[in-house]
Image (cartoon, rainbow, N blue to C red; front, side, top):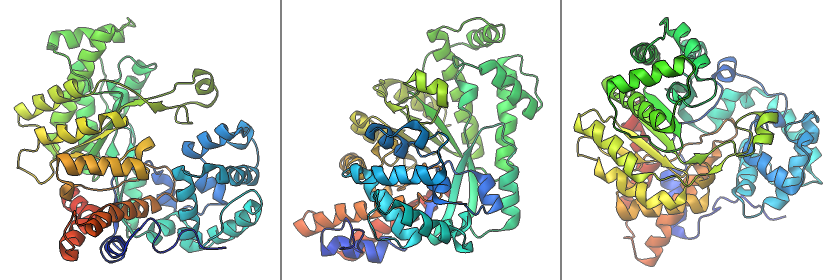
Amino acid sequence: MKTFITDNFLLENKYAEELYHQYAKNQPIIDYHNHLPPAQIEADTQFENISRVWLNGDHYKWRAMRTLGVNEKYITGDASDQEKFEAWGKTVPHTLRNPLYHWTHLELKRYFGIDELLNENNASTIYKNVNAQLQQQENSCRGLLKQMNVETLCTTEDPTDDLKHHQSIKQQNIGIKVSTAFRPDKSILIDAEGYTDYLQELGKVAEVDIQSFQDLKDALQKRIEYFDENGCKLCDHGLNAMSFAEFTEAEINAIFKNKLSGKEVSATDAEKFKTAILLFLSETYHQFGWVQQFHLGALRNNNKRMLAQLGPDTGWDSIGDYSQAEKLSRFLNTLDGKDKLTKTILYNLNPADNEVFATMIGNFNDGSVKGKVQWGSGWWFLDQKDGMEKQMNALSNMGLISCFIGMLTDSRSFLSFPRHEYFRRVLCNLFGKEMASGELPQDMDLVGSTIANICYVNAKDYFKF
């Protein structure tokens, strides 16, 4: 059978091929946002089988399997790991034209040298082949990262995390820079279930008895200081939309006290509170010179029946149609007006917001830093070929793609790093087609340096890891 993942996969002409092979392919990877478990990096975990490293937690695959009619037993249930892999193997041929088809075969080839198209008939053989390879030291979790030329990665932790795994990783000097991003969403979402319980946990870790809004700010300030001392230079927020409402300090204090006393918080009051705490956090990030990230637009936990059975992050989320522009503008403008807007990356999940985000960043790029406010790469449902191309086309048309800091995995899997290769191939093909058509000059040094910057150099300069 002819190889599917060829050297020139997704590259449609000689210009795209040269751009990829000479300027993109060998660039190190800076994966500045993912959800990898640092405990496994610390322990250099050797995975028992491919299901443990490839299927566990991957709600992309889970959604595809459910759509095909695979019983939940073989997805998150009590079936054996081999049975789950074989169920995935049966699903793969039905994912044609879904990015899962590309990712699956790219990952099998890059990590394990497997050129076969995974299907129901060969799933058992491939399962045994890969499992044997996973027992080799070069395929421990650190080995998998090094195979993909990962230079830096940044995980995501709650403010209550003690960062002991990151501390241990740093002491071990593993040859890969591993940092974290501060993710304080639970302290912001005052209208979420379990909010006051979370405040008790945060207060205990920060050694602050949280009885007022100022106490909450003090606790978060202490955790930011702790994260900063441990090398953290980024934060991340996953929000439906940016909050912004006018408020007074007296109002925020009253809203917070009402919440602590068990009273319901109205939607209006919740919006005021979220605005206040987000502005405080962003001003503090600026003080510490951090990069702030905002992932906006997910409609989460839609299927309440399955949420009750399996919990969050199990595949029941989709794109939301929230209004984004006005409040996002007012939020950024408030920070900019105080000269407290730090480097910022914005991600949208609704493709209808592409041009909104592409133009929003230009409002606050003030010439102080190259690409100070960034529109992040295609995220979640948009991190596939079509989504990436649309994001890069809008950014090119309305901003400077030459300043773009490129791709990230946003993944929980150690086998996800070929997504950087996938992005780089799409990027090179986009430029290569326009070189062939005469829309871009056939100047390989000019275009090639732009490609190298997007793949690696811009992120290296932006984050200064």
